[in-house]
Image 1 (tube, rainbow, N blue to C red):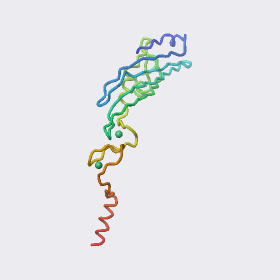
Image 2: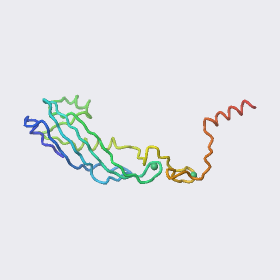
Image 3: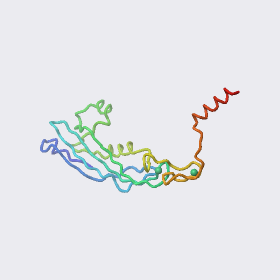
Image 4: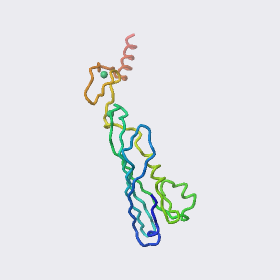
Length: 171
Ligand SMILES: [Zn+2]
Ligand SMILES: [Zn+2]
C-alpha cells in the first residue's frame, strides 16, 4: 500500500491510519490461509514521525515433531521511524536500514520492508504445542495421544558413562 503523506508533511494532520491486506512471500511447508491483515498508523510528533503496524497472518502447517496439522496465527509488530527523503544521509540510512522507512515524493510505501520482516521473523519451528513429545522413534506413535507400548527403559547416557567407569574400576 502507498500512503499519501502530504497531509502530515503539510502539517494538516498528525496521524494517518491505514488498513490493508498484504500478500506474503510463500514459505516452504507453510500454507497461508489468507493475505496478511495489516493495521497501523503514522504519527507526527513535532516533526518526529513514527510508523506502527501489526500484521496478522493465519497459517496451517505440520508440527515439526509429530507431523500433526497445526493451525495458528502469526502476529508481527512492525515499528519504524519515518523519514522524509533527503533528511537522512545515505550513511545514516545504511547503518540503520531496519529502523527507517523513507518517504519518496510525499508517498510512503512500506510493502517491501513489511514483506521482508514477515519473512525474516516468521517462526522457524512450528510446533502443535511447546511440549510436543513428537513421535516414538521406534514405533512412530504420536506420543501426545498417550504412551506407546515400546520398552521405555533406556539407560541415561550419563549413567552409561558412569557404568563404564565403574566397570573399569572393577577390572
Ligand atoms: Zn506436535
Ligand atoms: Zn513406540
